[in-house]
Image (cartoon, rainbow, N blue to C red; front, side, top):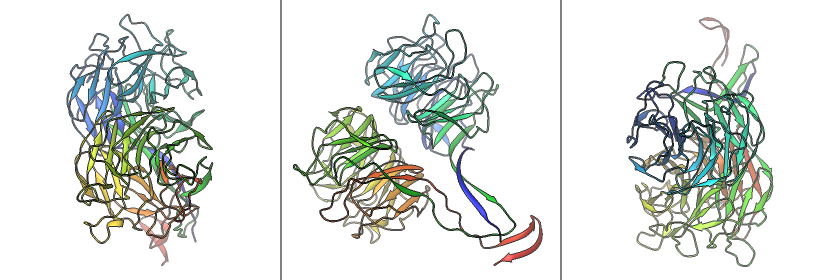
Length: 595
């Protein structure tokens, strides 16, 4: 008998190559909806080309207005910023990308190249770099979608550093200081000032970064072409798996659990793309086989919500979650309360302007989006900045029991119930940070639907309607930024569950059929498989995070039961039985022992 030990780890794997090999380029977006911006085909030239990545291959996008290199890329594939750079003179230019073309934005107060940046198209920061006098600077600027304003300076002036996160929860790391020494320092940004974070394991510059302030990824860099990867947990850096191709002056995008590296210098200019994420390691301890078929992805108890509720909205990550709105047992029953999760406990945040339930949400803890909901069929949209909500552009069609995906300035609303004919909606709307526009309709109009992902790579699952097939509760659809297509059917059809993750690594948990469920399923981009069960069966719960580290909270376990319980989801691995096991060396069978 043999015993196989399975474990989960992360590694880089080859993705589709850039159309044009480049170095000194910028990146934005996610692993399956990324943008590569500008750069040069050699160290001394600049190009205007933009390419879009769909998770497997790059395609041509709209050219920059001004060809340049060494800039910061910020935002999402359909709502990005290109900030600063060299043309070859030092630039203060900002350009906005809408998914097909670039347009001029507000100029930086201080032109610069090799800055770090983070945030969204309408709420960004740019820090550090080299100014037009070729001085290495510490100054930081914040962008509101049209104008840059001065903010708190970095503690350490530097250039060729990397950045990630949002305007109110940013991070920068690495780079070279004014003495041209390479540094390990990390700084964290709260939207106003910088504070010291944990130091990188190895000093580096001309590196790339991705993720959030408490789930950051740093990869590549110089002084020689480095292949090292480091992961940040909000306080310390740890070693990640090495890049296949060591390089510097590269572009980066994505998250800590789904990163993307592309282009760079080795010291020749390269086109290769690599994707970072979870893989399964199975090691054999003896020469036969024992099958194990038990998912080890599990939920564990987290800190309870302050206010019990169901039918609320959710956003963020496992260590930086956001819960807002819903229905509770207090007076008034419909709540405006917002709570923020730090990985162990919830604290009160700023109240919604409009109390509501059956709403949808997306984004992050410091850049959240809430839209639609009840009572009635609401159109109102609100944006959260980490402390308070402000009014955004109204939905075109008011509705409740809808689903949402994306980030604050690249959001998606779909499905739900509206005050029209038909009652069940198939409408999709796309948000650009200020207004909603019409997107492609769902194949099956439905309400009490769930969704996750990005604006250009969305997953919709479950829900119900009258003009749909008999298995509507099992239906999955995938959005590519233009239209929906059918995905793999859920194992357990249901509605009012919590969804989190991405289009190719999604999770759907809880809900009802109408029985209240504990079951969880994981999506791999093609099909659903069983995940770990919830501790408490419920529906109307909120969700946040990614497939390997998710969060669910609140909900109800009966007609009038409102819950405070929070559960944290952490990835495991499933080892499936094989049909035959052999003793001997590959190619030289000694004995077949099973079956």
